[in-house]
Length: 315
Ligand code: TXD
Image (cartoon, rainbow, N blue to C red):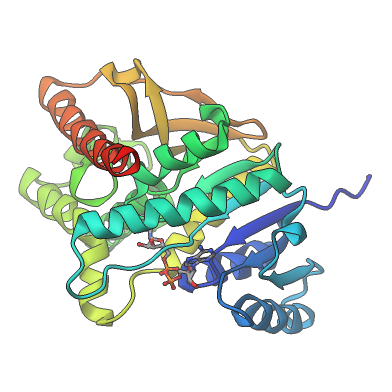
């Protein structure tokens, strides 16, 4: 079989970025280039990961750098660069600062990897996908936000713990924005094919949905500083693996909708087929009036963030 080395650049060598680098290399999915603005940080982490390779039995090349020429011809670029909210900072401050960071890193990354697929991780997620779409000029199929894979993994974990079953047998269906505006669809969530409402009372399902919505905040309040990164990094691996191995997994991803689900020109999380071309298909299911309303509200909150960025850019 011809050997084909694949390359993933991860922008931002912080918690999510470095852990995703570890997961991707250890799964043998691709070589990894880790890049950050902080000098020494990506180099140190990449070297440490490379030194673990003999013990982890992989042969992936790990590069740490501050120079975008090293990212040349990446197949996938994962953007985790950004700031976390600092005391005294409003949500809008974070929005505008991260928009500026994402704009800068995407412009440089796509210059060196014009055929890549972008996976955006930086928060506020859905709005940052808009920024990446606009900056890269890439078609929507190649600019994909990571949030739904994480939200549904959290929901699956809680359902599995509650029912005392393997999480591998639990499949969860979520739509909408990341976190607060997530729209879970319990009737499409199953345990070994059995719809969740047949196994759990509505109040119990609602409690787990609520815990999932607050999943990020629950971890932040435990950690005191920083936010979740193990499950987010695993979510990135899942998406990268489905793309680079053309698995065509059906995963919830944030994508620019053009009329699907009654939403136009807004990035929202929906189930998609993820393969070598990026988003190969958007899967549409019919929604109840309540679900449709919740999805519209989710799209509305993303739209208002995008407008805030637009106003700040033109001001
Ligand atoms: O579901 C999801 N999408 C999320 C999103 C799940 C978890 C984390 N989520 C968001 O990802 C989080 O709110 C942040 O916006 C990003 C990254 O989270 P992480 O926990 O990895 O943050 P860190 O550890 O602070 O790392 C950020 C790194 C840090 O090393 C900075 O130096 C770097 O980003 N950074 C940059 N790198 C390159 N270029 C620029 N301009 C830059 N600015 C900061």
